[in-house]
Length: 344
Ligand code: HEM
Ligand code: HEM
Image (cartoon, rainbow, N blue to C red; front, side):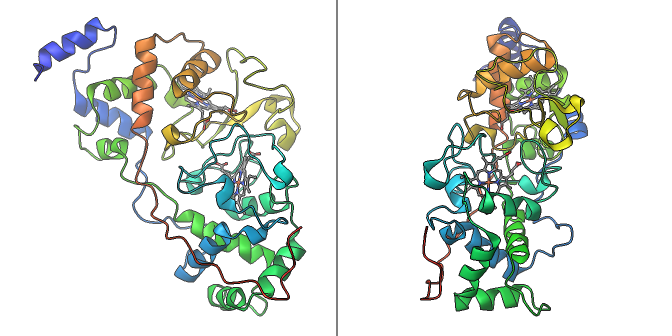
């Protein structure tokens, strides 16, 4: 085994700051970040009940929410693969390629708002978007309601999930059920969270160096809190705008939401939980290598040129943000009836 003093000296020789005090590092980090809770969080105006979660899970996996009856939420937010599709930009109805990269649904409940531009205030508002989007599921609320009402098991499950309502099978309640299920898609227990909670050997020396750099260089100014991001909006290119290959000119981000000049090319700081699972990166999905994404952030957001060692250390730290993936049992969906609208 390498002697600790020698290891420290070797790190210093490698051009990285030596870490004198793990406890101090843990304390500093705990001032910026919060662990993912191990309990399902409460959701505003939507009690997360067992019946709602179970129904929401079925809806999340049900391709009959799409006009083609081929595409489910899970198509683009694959829960076997980190909650996204690992494509540059998503492919939806009629093989249409959408304009943006799909973010993960994992831990999305902790983001300040949904979508790269934050245009949906919460997950129930968000869920109604893709079902109707032409390049995603291309359906209408009317056809979705008809589909659900044609399937007796769904009608019974909506009644159980929304017991006090006379007409429980609605597009709004579908969105509420999906939101309740999504609230369960959290990933506690990452090595970083273990470190935050006091297990000082949960990170190795390089990862600790990466964490220190992440804070000292200023990444933490925009990526902090429980999701290590996802809390506020910033221009992509605060110091130096990336080229059009990475920041395409036709996507002006929050400008389309607020129509104010100060929102031009402003996006939500990416939540970095499970980031090692969700390549490619940025709203354009143009960057496949996490190290390259780190280097781009340093130049575009901080005006800093990081050394290869620094980039490697920060990337190693980002790898410790991968938590326990939710164990989701594949739902068996109720069969269509002769009243169910046919695929288009
Ligand atoms: C964004 C859930 C269907 C592609 C999101 C987000 C959530 C979500 C929660 C925001 C995450 C964040 O901002 O961090 C759902 C649900 C669906 C569904 C519940 C089913 C009802 C789909 C499908 C596709 C897709 C079928 C692909 C065809 C995307 C893309 C974004 C996104 C590209 C980012 C769009 C933007 O920022 O403008 N989805 N999704 N989603 N989803 Fe989905
Ligand atoms: C996105 C890391 C500094 C704001 C990202 C992504 C990574 C990352 C990996 C991609 C997320 C994804 O594709 O899901 C870092 C690192 C930093 C840093 C390692 C320090 C070297 C900053 C700072 C700001 C910032 C200082 C704010 C001034 C953003 C924004 C996005 C983003 C707005 C979304 C960009 C987009 O539209 O695609 N960051 N970041 N970041 N970060 Fe940072």
